[in-house]
Length: 414
Image (cartoon, rainbow, N blue to C red; front, side, top):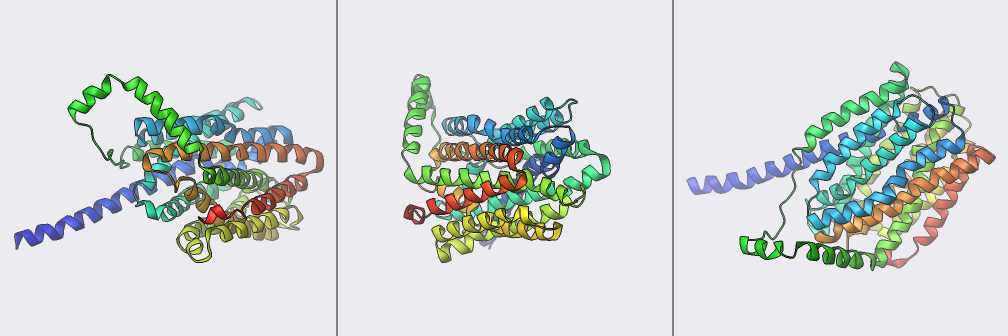
């Protein structure tokens, strides 16, 4: 009887531990992205209020991606070499906290530019953490893992962005940055309790002694070999380029100039919340469904193509919205469209790699799409200076059509 009881307790204990790990990870993820996005809806109006031109606004918005282009791949490669993921979460939380402080510095462009660059470092530190969550699932459930992670990420962004306008209305621009500092501080504490699995094959003392004599050489060889294997993947290159275009669209629209379009239509800081919610809630829900239900039923390639075409259509419709109600409708469908492809591209980026190579692959993938975060709003800002906001949004629509054409490649369904 005692043996039976112990056997019943063991699975139950394991199940409780499993749920606890996922819950802690979920809370850390939500806090992480809330810190980064609590000021995003007010950022372009805030920069305009500080007297910056459209060109400067576009450059500062895009500099978030510039840091990531430089740092994501090295961070992913280093994470694979040392076989650790969790420390990078703490580094990211610290960077997010510093970012919010820098935004509050007086002056014109120096503080916001430094803050946005530091925010890029915070986002770059997410690379190993993405791979850590994938390790919670079997390899054949990568779509499900990345779909869940995309949902948590978007939920964290929604949590921050939905209160951004209200905070600015209640306490001024800096109130949102102060709340970001507080969220990051709590996130640092939560991140200490995130579970990280131990390496699958521990070394005994003899192995350690042998390896200690050749550590430097082994690390150099493993870095080169790992990077070479990763860069040979044609699928990784294809989905990285698609994601570059996808992030160009995202950082031209909701994370870029859509709030300015809302301001031009007469939105107050508090009304920006409604525009944000109309995009983020459907975006979060569809992110959870696209990998679990839609791709298995209709095929990954078809879902990606439909997503890009719809994103192009509703991005082009933004500058023609006659009022805030119609603008909210374009954001709702744009949120759905962009959620169709983001989780699928994310899972495809690491699908064909063993766990030891996944952070390197993810680092390359995210470094590449970070160029879209920079070039999208930067080029759109230049076009906006010449032809108004309409020019930038039509450029974003052109990116969507280009991505849909490139998505016709059958390897995406392999």
